[in-house]
Image 1 (spheres, one colour):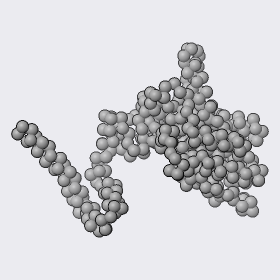
Image 2 (cartoon, one colour):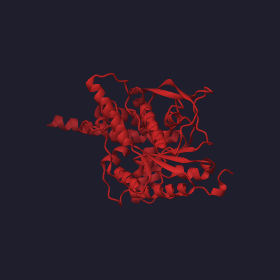
Image 3 (cartoon, helix red, strand yellow):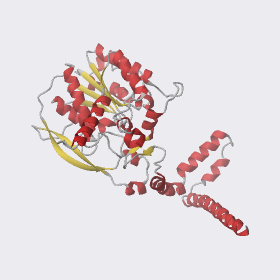
Image 4 (cartoon, helix red, strand yellow):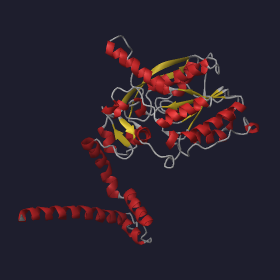
Length: 396
């Protein structure tokens, strides 16, 4: 019994020394940098609940000890517990998912708790469609499925052999847009069919060109295969509707391979974890104009304008460039397209940008508006009613 009490005492003292040493190290670091010790801040404000929480948050964010230990703690969490932290979820077979996307798919919130919802999005989209129509400009809406909506089986075994899941809010918006006469492209159906076709070819052992998944394993975004399929589908829909006729510009594709660490992992800001996980090897088709040999670049003076978020940026404006949705849309339409991209801001911010860059709307016949489905609830600045730039100012 005495021996047990001795062990308990040693453990308690050791734990106390560990906690106390962190505080001492923090104070010494502050003094070395000629800063006031952060612990003194608790005495500088009234001891209210809000001030104590602010002090706690500042202490964590500015702590030298926390900054040194957190990355290694995140690595240990992932390796030992399969816990990827507050922003990410570790899936199966090396797949990672963005937690807000998973929450959008799995959590049902009362309307009073949601930042915004399908009704807000529907109202904003219909208003924008009507404003464009008054200028003789068509609108095509492209809702990009969340990664976990298309690959639920990579998030959890309970996903089974599901081809795709359409969240209730997404289905509500799609149905509302259809009822309002707003043209959309159903990528849920298209992506599910692509998964089904590949699975059937694999099971029969028939000849099939290997296709990579439609989304990146470590990233929130689609893969080159997903971007190309979406671009081809959107281009076909534009032509079917008679809104755009194929042009005469020839494009060819060149194989480009890159190694990329996914944005879900980079969000964790843990260098040890990033070194522990190998980047994905990604094979892209870079689009090159046939006559000039130059890689594709969006052009302002063309009839098609594409608005959207980082799903338009990936592979297009970052490595390897000219290999994303925009380039392959132009290749399938056989003509250049204009673009305005706002990372995480396709619900409202990109339309506000267009109001400021009014020259982009000049001589347009079609606006393609892309946004990821989780932004129905989580889009930056919600779904505000944003007017078009005044006609008299366009082109000035």
